[in-house]
Image 1 (cartoon, rainbow, N blue to C red):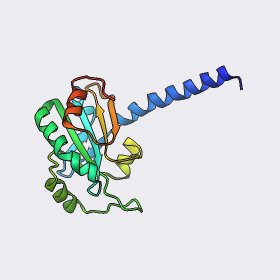
Image 2 (image 1 turned 60 degrees about the vertical axis):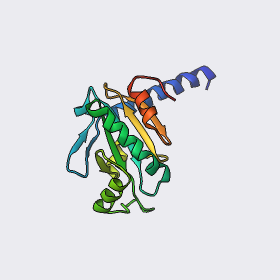
Image 3 (image 1 turned 180 degrees about the vertical axis):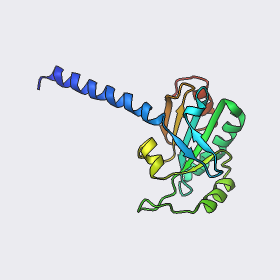
Amino acid sequence: MHASRRSILFAGLLSMVVVLVPARCLAFDLKDTDGGVQRLKDLKGTWVVVNFWATWCAPCVKEIPEIAEFAKEQGKKTRVIGIALDWDGSGKKDADEAKLKRAATKIGHAYPLVLGDDKTEKVFGKIKGMPTTIVYGPDGKVAYNKTGVVTKELLTRVVNGEKVK
């Protein structure tokens, strides 16, 4: 195949991937541990921060108090949701809900908590590393995505519209 045709084919495939990912994420509808439902479509016009973490992940545990402080300072301007991915090697949850809620409270998790499962993986895809944080803008599109620790300062910059790497 000629190089320019391969480039055109690759660009076409890449544009299809870019289009599919945000549309897929618009469908999230997750039940938190307090019985509330977290829906991205209900939060249109609001910044939404989704943080994937686990109790056994030291960097995750380290960032949670900063994320909680960020959530408190933001108030209704931003919704923060934590998704706990405490699974064993077989893909089943390692901790029961009550134990996980106690651990989350102990480390300062003070925002809606969702227990990760097959449904969350279908919505967000397989998380490749932890912690991972996805920030959706008021338009419902992904504005920021990072695998690694985030800080209150970084999240504040993102929701203030700054382009952050």
